[in-house]
Image 1 (cartoon, rainbow, N blue to C red):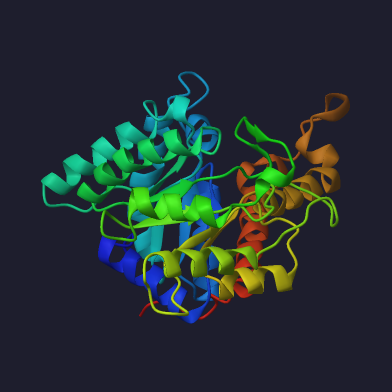
Image 2: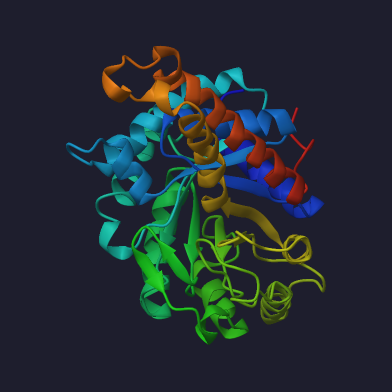
Length: 343
């Protein structure tokens, strides 16, 4: 199917929230990892989200110029072509963008989509993330207001992160401490500044102990039940019906989470969960196996010529794509999105 239109993307998110499931948001850094994500979604019969971080966009821009905008636009245009061959709806998203990279990444991409919309076309990306978690909440929300208005004008959904997520993501690092938990006051201030859909739709990455990257059980304490407190606190403050869930939440730093933690997050309004670390490993592990198993074929050892069939990138690339696609299917199952694709 074509890349999701703004209307389809909104319908996807509405269905996820109502059905208490979430879409895996898979970070990609190449055409091959893009195909792996699309394949995983298709085989799970799940719609999904593909996203490009600032580091991923820089890598896509090539090591000569490392231009983030060129890299992101090029992969997005490629995705608009190849996604038509997969029987699922997929939204394109840009991942964590801190303040010092807004002018070199999100703002130029918003301009690209604005020009497309003005020509009567759909935006290039369906959502963008503003990561102001390193800023004061006041400054974070002030920039969020500006970006939300620009995004809404281009039929794009904004994602905001209002409090820190621990660990490291593309050079942005936060300590693992008690600040990793969003308060009801933080959530209320967010709703006051960004509205509850009246100023444009946004996704909210609230913190409930999340940590980016790999961590062993016991190193962090996830409290996904906190999301319920945030929903109820904001609903009460803004006179919403009891039991309503005003926010569309995003789950960051999900590697190593238990099934119960994920289930609790879904029940409390999570509609999108980011996956990067686990899918990176799933892509690379088959490549490592191939290289170790074909050592004397991929290298020209002792003056020999090697074996072109095993050092051809297609030979190990196919295994890498399958490994990552399989992991995407597992994510769909964990997030209850398997079999939920829009027809």
